[in-house]
Image (tube, rainbow, N blue to C red; front, top):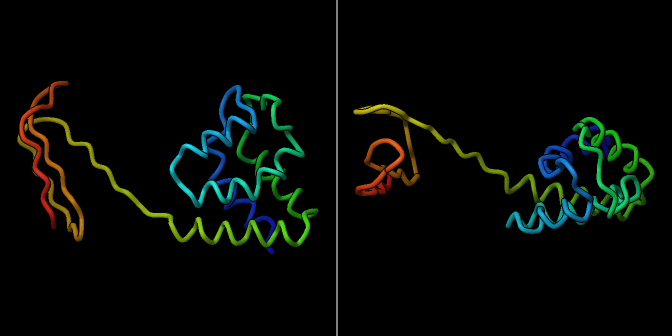
Length: 142
């Protein structure tokens, strides 16, 4: 197991849930409502390592940085038992398999035309002006 690489991947997925005045328990609840089963499986595999460091009900410092979390995970992984390591690697593989990319384009102004190669996508077109975007919504299947 490459501890640096694994810690980097884990941090990439879970750090966005770390925020001001949160506890590990609150982070777990937010991840649980994120509707991402693979992320929840990864969280359940990793949270034990984080609870050892941060305690479940203690508020995490608001100035925590991604590098702090990554260093903690890396240090804890080195000491983890083989079962925990295998569980984390399996959860990471499942999560990595579900990562998809989404592109969003915001177009402002009137009478704009945008062309791009689009395959197997739903294109939604809304008409209207200002904050009141009304009218027909057209979904073009390409």
